[in-house]
Length: 339
Ligand code: ADP
Ligand code: MG
Image (tube, rainbow, N blue to C red):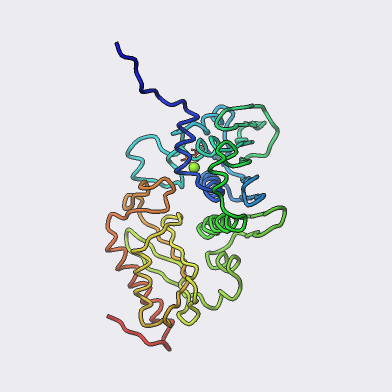
């Protein structure tokens, strides 16, 4: 009889491998934690960063909290409260659903989570290091969750050495924060870096949120875009062609409040600007698309920044026409070429 050479990997090793997909850098942790706070229904979220996230990333929210019974499970792979059956994948209304972020993060860092649900009188503290639970104790706390991720990649020196300079890592962190902030102008969001408050964003409209992030000078340059059909709503702002920048502008698409990268839709917007821009200049845009979740597939990449439309041609043409209308009405002094 031959002995088996194939072995199932222990969970903490499997998690460490899986972590490579979800957790590339401190900004990935920021994205996952902020998304969890959004999914938890928090209306106030604070992000604390130290050493560009290399020593600390902490997110504090006032969402639904995690119960004492669930708290360990939250850090297991494929453990999620957001979907239960395969069909749910076609009706995703939450940012998360794969149940792998917390397990991945905990596999490659030292995590301290304190959480309390509204119907419990006391909270729970859970400490995990490299995927292994170190302690779980009751702890008095407010309703909501705070998750501190310390010393990312402490147990994978090769990954830690690959991190870029603090300024580069910080730029990625700010970008993730801004994406969440733009998608959720109704929430109060704070970002503190090494003790210095960088953003303290009050709840407001999309326009107010854009201005509070990108500055007052943006206010006069925003042109509203709006289009609605039975399955899709397009809203948001494009910037005037005259203020297009030499560097690639701030260009944001959100599909059902999720920031996505989509070169096809980007092309639709750029096509609408055709003939209006000085050579080598780029407009900024903030476009929010709300669509029936059955019309899209978000489960094509672990970080979910890419999505697939069931019918992307229709979305393309609708977006281009809406952008044309916006620019046509508001850019009358510019040369125009409608087809
Ligand atoms: P997913 O978001 O895909 O469900 P995660 O690993 O990010 O997977 O989180 C696992 C589970 O932990 C979530 O489904 C949720 O029930 C719980 N959870 C995580 N973060 C929070 C939070 N900030 N507030 C309340 N519950 C949370
Ligand atoms: Mg999640």
